[in-house]
Amino acid sequence: MGQYDSPENYVALYGLMQKAIRASEKENPETAARDILEQNGISTTITAQCLGNVKLITGNAVAVHEPVTGVDGLFWITADSHTVRRGVYQTKVTLDFRNLMDGQAAGSLPKE
Image: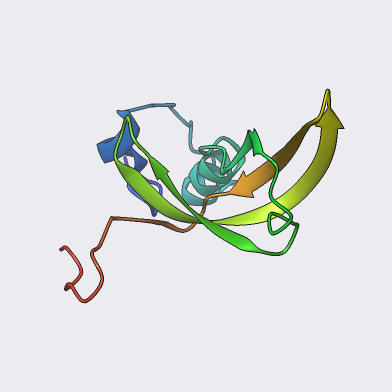
């Protein structure tokens, strides 16, 4: 009997999700467990809409602070669209947040 966790330790962030895998002689249960974790992991992209900004384009990065959870992150822009409706310029971006980080003040040491 074995237990396999996601490398990012999602249990600490989101709670425990379990699935039983029956081992067979032809299939390695560790490989099956790793495949399940990879295929059913936490989604790493979100879509956000804001007032228009010409710097928010695919390939750039943006630092975002989420005030409810207090999470800060460096997010890569993987898609963008820019529209003007009724005189209001808006930007819609898809962000990949695989690079989450904790907040730091300039010149401070990283938190452990």
